[in-house]
Image (cartoon, rainbow, N blue to C red; front, side):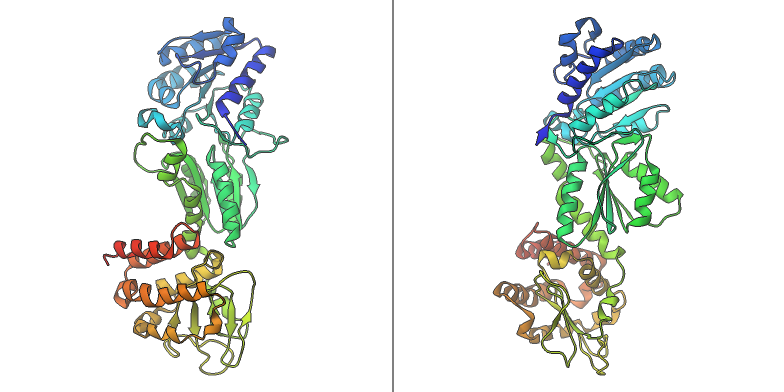
Length: 486
């Protein structure tokens, strides 16, 4: 179910106004768009429309607050930050006055109004203001709960709301606590730290990644200031990768708030920051813009898959089962020269490729290149490529980490055609394998090309795109060929 944050906030503020006579609402000719009209229609004597004069609105609110009132100023994020920032700093925050700055149109999700109305630097600006509290709710329920929890808060508060309706994700018994982040999904492979409307997308990505074998933690940072650094450090110590997600510039927002304590603590956990790059937005729907600027569910998935290749332990442990020989990257068969048929190590996955390390000296363990040569193939199905162990194997081979000598033997790759048919279980697998052997390898993985970091990364990106269903194998190959200049 979707619900409007600004509407629920506006109605909740009206309800608070029935009990608290010290609440006043101000707007700068945007009472309808910001939903301040819910309050104004019922309490016109405590409602003030100052016209298009945001600086005056904040100054008036500061005067009210100095007299014991709780004024709520309503406008768009860009107008508060880019027009009234002087008054917010000097008239409100400097004196630590209880003025509430309610911005209902923030980030790319402002959408069709275009770049001039999309505030993508507001968190960065407000984080630097002393005494300022910053709230970025994950859904409409949390917007209402935060409003009620901060009714009597003694200092200024910036509420960062959204224009469009957003998915409800939090249960009715959810509780909001200032300065506390909330873990919404468990996992120790990676953690996605999200704020605002990116929290539902983070949860969706976590569910999808679980299908790929990744257990990804999701943490909701609705309180951006004060900030729960303890939760950040816990995630950094307990997971292998941190991904931050915000509808805001990558500079100065949640990504920075996460990176600061991690680096200060001397932790080496990799951090991937997803946000708006160093560009302005444009006009489109909010969801279209989020997807275009790399904030889609698929982008979150890719960020974990790509970085996961280099942060998961070396896959050599896969060979310690005493069987050696061959790994089929989908259904996980391992065998020695004496083992027939292959022994499945896990179920439910398809396979279309293999690493072949022949057991030359008969000790039940694979003999690594260059002694035994190598046959190379790649599993392209979603569940197979989603497994961190599979990704680690691929990364180890493609980057040459640990088996660099194999790159020099790439001219022997046609030998993969001799892999026994019992590796495959469906016609679809055979077709994909044949396409990989006959089409992909000759075109994009010549030995000289594989030594290029760009080609190696391009190949991994192409495989990840196929694994997550974003591209067909044919489309991924075309894009990869274009990237490496055919």
